[in-house]
Image (cartoon, rainbow, N blue to C red; front, side, top):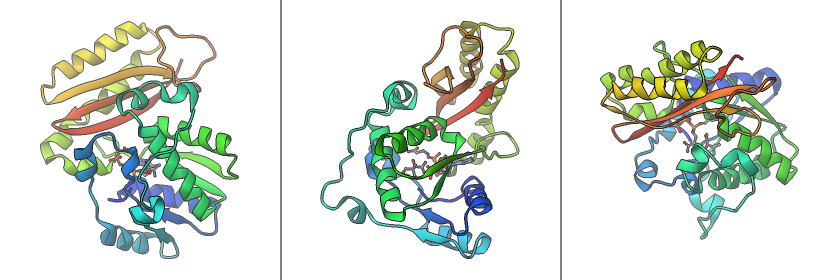
Length: 254
Ligand SMILES: Nc1ncnc2c1ncn2[C@@H]1O[C@H](COP(=O)(O)OP(=O)(O)OP(=O)(O)O)[C@@H](O)[C@H]1O
Ligand SMILES: CC(C)(CO)[C@@H](O)C(=O)[O-]
Ligand code: BAL
């Protein structure tokens, strides 16, 4: 969606390891925003983004359609059945969000017809949704998940970080610290205790409001209340700093 940072550039780097040519889509997709102010305030720097891409990967194509190109007169999302993957977390707190993501990604794939498409693990639930989308639509594209790029503090790079003051950005490392604490304690503590630990950490930071903290299996993304053997889990957080909503997640070893 633009306002490029090194997390986005890393996706292009990964693409060029596998592909002869990369196409970068830059489109702030209205149908995936459930909050008008979030859409309105979403950072937009198309010319600057193009210069950044040109400097780092000169042969890369940029596809930056406008809303009319994609939607015509009907700026509406299609309905998809992604099953359990969209029932919780982002799906629960951003109503309609994943239908909007599914709609735009399906259309971008139809237009660009890529062999591979690269998405960040920072938006892990979105990555699972897109894997499910290509299963449903039978689009012949291989989806590749790419590691989350972080600031030195651990904060996940995100376009929305631009809306934070320097102090808020520094304080926002609490999100990754919480995930790391959960990862360290995951084997020895119950899920209920881990939740309490995260809630306490956030209570001590009055500028932050925890929207959700969940531990979910990576396949179905259903929040779990007890650990099952032979299951891979991740911890997920969404939190507000003033009005800015940030998300992050981390794989857990069990
Ligand atoms: N820190 C990151 N590391 C790796 N990939 C990332 C990172 N941040 C974003 N991406 C990926 O880049 C792609 C484009 O993301 P998008 O344009 O929504 O930016 P964003 O930085 O996630 O913005 P925001 O978090 O404010 O929504 C997505 O696949 C997303 O997962
Ligand atoms: C997948 C996506 C391009 C759909 O607009 C967007 O949600 C993003 O960049 O993460
Ligand atoms: N970065 C994922 C898409 C969104 O926040 O709308």
